[in-house]
Image 1 (cartoon, rainbow, N blue to C red):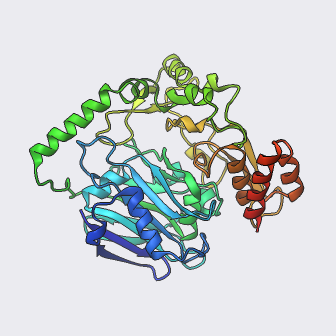
Image 2 (cartoon, helix red, strand yellow; image 1 turned 45 degrees about the vertical axis):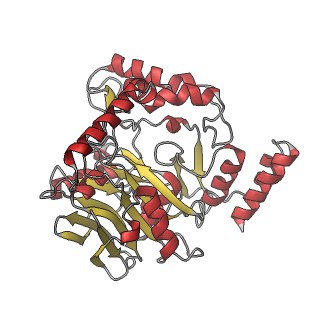
Image 3 (spheres, helix red, strand yellow; image 1 turned 60 degrees about the horizontal axis):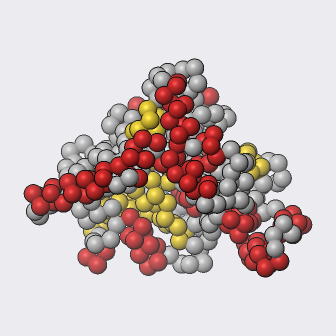
Length: 419
């Protein structure tokens, strides 16, 4: 499994390479970091043509016997922090890339203005297709359209209007085994980087693919079995997560003051009990329908820490409303992706770099934006300064809420971000 796909959006070309020998022991985050450090100018504009977007699988991708091996890492120079960022998600993308033998997809350059594309990957390689009718569509609409065009079994990674417009809190939605783009690569503004390449979606069809070759098949099966047994014997991965999902950590994280809330300015949330794993479990059971207290988002995962959250008074799972059409409103509810970090409360009103006050939409700090730079007041200031650029008077008054030493550090971070 050493295939690499390199996509040049400026030239609109796709070529295949072989992963260098010295990188073959790396996967995911490590592979992203190595490639970006070697190839990027550290002073490049994160949203400009010289940045790269790297999709990297783990070394066991495509092997269903290894739990959680199908996760995908997306690496780039973050427009939110200015540093290298890896954003990790579940779903089926990593698994299907592994079955095709791909360890990495590198997207570079920038498509011509007003031209937008879908990257289709199958056993024969990759190709760029026009994103006809998709630009402006939200993630669920895009995923349904692409599955209709390319088949119900493909995996899709797509952005919505936030990524298209370059919003610094936007992520990339990856489809799960039911075909919904519920699994988010959400940290660092990776959706904005993808949108500024002119890339709406990546579609992977693993028809004709196969599990990667293993030298000692029986030994490998035995080792994978021991790993799965260890996961099931652990109190968190064998009990809490399968029973409550990752929201099972909400109460604990809130108690120790590490729960991101109120725009990451506080570490505890007064209504944490209302969004805890226990509350979610009780609500799912009460509503019935297609709601499930445990759910696997990728093939072979034994932890099953996802939940399917049904609409109130309806049988179907929560999801974006396709009837709204492209770029018309935001989903009121959606299937939970079961992260304890989605408890972030509050909104940011739309003043972003390049937008006059009040012109941008409100963005939830939650599922699609939860993975930003650091918690606490410093992280909140860095995030707000980069994403919203508030006036200095606001920054100074906010700094007065903190002790002098902390105030100095917080205001220094904010001023640095505003340079």
